[in-house]
Amino acid sequence: MLTILLHPTSPEPLYRQLCTGIVAEIAAGTLTPHEKLPSRRALAAHLQVSMITVQTAYEQLAAEGYLYAKPRIGYFVDPDAVLLACVPSAAFQPESSPSAQPCQPADHIHFSTSGVDSGQFPFATWAKLSRQVLRTEQQTLLYATPSLGLYPLRQAIAAHLRAFRNIHAAPEQILVGAGTEYLLGLLVQLIGASRRFAVEDPGFHKGKQILRSNGASVIAIPMDEDGLDPTYLQHSGASVAYVTPSHQFPTGIVMPIRRRLRLIQWAENQPDRYLIEDDYDSELRFQGNPLPSLYSLDRGDHVIYMNTFARTLTPSLRIGYMILPPKLAMRFEQDFSFYSCTVSGLEQATLLRFLEGGYLERHLNRIKKTYRQRRALLLSQLHMHPVGRYLEVCGAQAGLHLLLRVHLNCTESQLVEAAHVAHVTVCGLSDYHESPPPAGQDFPGIVLGFACLSPEEIQSGIKRLLDAWSQFLP
Image: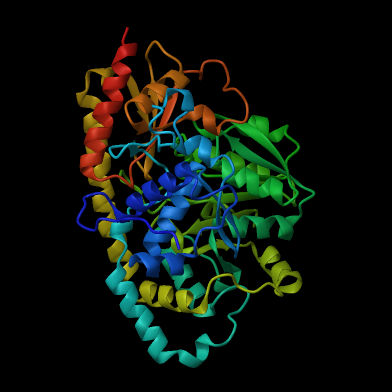
């Protein structure tokens, strides 16, 4: 069994300690390429931590490229992980220390865009509601849930969407599944893999990979200051467009209403066109009210709405949902109802009570306050530093990440490398592009996530980052 020494009294979160320990095991060769890691339950019991802690660590390491996941099987060591985990060249190692060493020191700070602050999860409430379900619904839990998900849960989700997003949908249109990734793959089967799918460029890489892995043809559409460009879309030959209008990933663009209406008009021009609206963090908005969703503006049943509880609760719950237009909902019932729902009955019943009891609304108010404070701290640290005058902050009004346009005498790769030398990990905007950005949009871009960092880590990380970039001042 994998044994990692954890320090509960340390200010560093347990999941980050676990990440560091697993990377060290990979670097030392204890964990070999393609080796399966212990299950969440087994490792949590062995280390005496929660399954949420283990799952968060696994997902973080998968996002960073150390692990890869096989659905319903588990997590495995990525064959290229040793290149990430070890010092780049063994020739620079002292002869008395031949074994590889982790390249991430103890003070390493990662401005990751994946994950949330696991310390914000309402463990006590969730555990109480789970016990209530186990005590009162024992017989119900033994039966398979409907393929669309528990009907009362779909009713509760519909009520939540009416209250928070002014979205009016019948429970019969809502499909519950194990996260956006699963639902997106199912959607390709439902509307047809022979279609051409348009995606944002830059955009969500995993979404493109899921579409392609399900046999779909994918074309990247460039962005302008308002989001996905409808002119390019019109001539792309696509009949489906996957967009994130409320807070585009990774640029942070909030699509204005005029652009939303143009996309809907594009969809309405042909009867078989669809817009897939991924509303992944619309509930985490810090300035003003959210703009109307594409779904609420649509009058022709051309919008498929997707959302998840990954950002508001925790990614490890793997509970997402989508709203299908009535015609597609009927097609699912007729042709795909043989699929089993991929979310356990216990988790669905617990989430139902969480929604009906008003716990989600209170939880949202609490985490929005926390994340608003961290966002304000991040922005203040950026503006206070001498380098701050050369930074343009984009997309900070919503969500858990923002984009920095950097106006210094350097390239994007130089910025990322300077951060690495300062023990800080950041991602360049070019990492999310499929093709070079258009002329005039070639300023280096750096994507910063802040949800997983404590206030102390934000302060230290931004100071180190901008101190490292000071060498590029004009």
